Image (cartoon, rainbow, N blue to C red):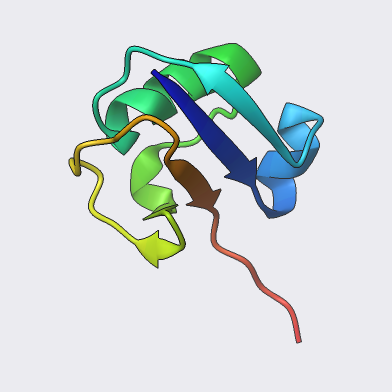
Length: 79
């Protein structure tokens, strides 16, 4: 299935893009993260991230649907 993935903060820098549309066999955000971590070498555990699907925070085991927009959100700091 095809999904749209967007990256924030240092994930964007590491991926070298703000987002990408990709074909995946991942059924959940957790499986998708495993694929993307292998592709981009993010080198962080998903427990350090939040995930949103279609602009709403989601559980890592929610079922993905074709056309979903998935956003991985790392912890941020600033002032």
